[in-house]
Length: 349
Image (cartoon, rainbow, N blue to C red; front, top):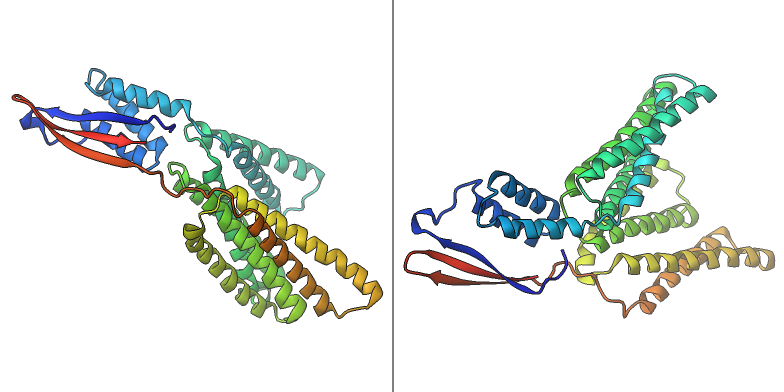
């Protein structure tokens, strides 16, 4: 909701017998809508104001509700709609094309075409239905994509720990693994959408969490496979799920102090990629000159990526942080008239 300066909302001027509002009365819906605005839940606030106008069109709060509703409709934030559509499209298409394999059918050209079309239609149709009444901001989409990708990563680590192919025959274990993978993809995405569709989470936090998870995997897998040279996939998976999940949890706590924007997080990731590529291409040259050990080469890539990220952090140090909460200021003052009693609330947005 755009800043509209200081405005005074008159809540009250109520008769004394009606001072305590009844549930679902016009004033309870109006106050509820204002509270939802302060809690940064614009979709739910919109529903509250709309319900007031439907049930109490002659209410003294109808005009204010209409104004707030119009402002909410004018500031509909769909900045994350493109990536949300792409995520749904990729998830639905992949799921549809893997289902025949789950049920023992071969994916020939005709089957691939039919399932592919079904997946595309389902992905586009579900995206339209899910975003029709619920705007998808970039902040919401960051959390949806992050939740799905991190859930998938955890599932892959879990299959490395359980190793179902050592317990059941390969055809059965492969179907179980694929079925779990598809359920994880669909379930995590649906759960994240349901959780955040009416919320306004901090945008930078979701992106910081996902990037932290990616880099935790990057450094861990290079270190464990390239330097420590783990040859036990179960040990690698156990370490991976612990370290990467701790990185996710730590990033959520760390972000509250760093308060980075998603832009700064992305620039730091670009710095890491650039540094990693410099290290990789440098090892190609060194291999021709000095033939270093593979551990030395991996160490150089890790160090270069870390240096690239450190340089990006320093270069972006003057970027403005993303506020976790807006600076809302609320003041209360009583209003006493001979025939009416109420109170006045001043809210700065």
